[in-house]
Image 1 (cartoon, rainbow over the protein chains, first blue to last red):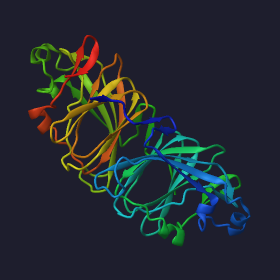
Image 2: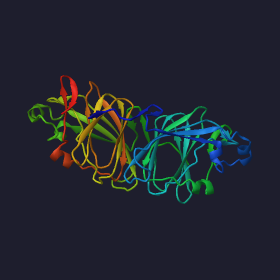
Image 3: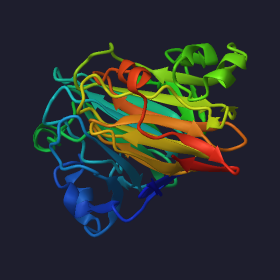
Image 4: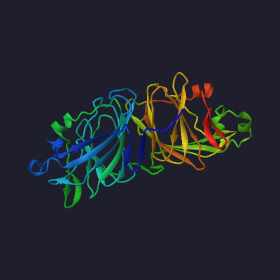
Length: 181
Length: 181
């Protein structure tokens, strides 16, 4: 009648039997980075990020919520910081929260008119990603960037639009500093 | 083009200009506790809990999400631990996450058939509250119980059903220990 919860979210860890782990390597990020020569020269098995997810209901369930923790490694491809694939939601009006628990980075957002802007991520920053807004995270620091996420279980992921058209701006390392160009 | 996020969520604090604070005193919790004599004898201006909320879209917006942090003070009314009002969601299938960041408590949940159960809350515990499930938190420890929350902006709060019918079980302090009776 009194249960222990199945999942724990403590600091930057999300643990428990129902938590699933997904690994994204450079080879999973084809057509994402600007510098294709630098990309081709890199080790395709290099891990760029890991996502731990708690999905207590089926994907597509209306009204449900998912919870995740992402660890994005530091690094660059050419001048561009390691970053997540980026996506719109399939049900376009679905929002999402990201909150940074460790590291330094930038949340890139792009609306349906291809206006792109960014929010700085540092420990404690909480980011509301409105519906109809593509989102991607870049690690601009020297260590791991870890951030939590909560999103509707029926949101879905539209990665294809970003792979095809990208964001309208890129976050590059210019004279050692992140610049949205 | 590069912005600071408007809200910070660090440890047990949720801060920033858009964050709203709501205070619930004993006088706001009429018809919640079992022991009405003990309730009537108590100081009605005693603060039972405070909720800090980040509501970036209008209440009722489909697809949006809200984010909150609740601080529930320790105390009892008769044998019953201080607790939140408890509610179903108005759109019944809407889920919610709670996660404990400080203190000790119990999350009481009740389905539409009035089956009631509880999950133990301690720092790091993450709780998925499924749709169609009333939820209430009781502080069973000696200090403040603080927990985060994320829920859909169109969920709404049905407090009236709980004020009228209560949960089918109560969490009482029996020989110094919490018991669901």
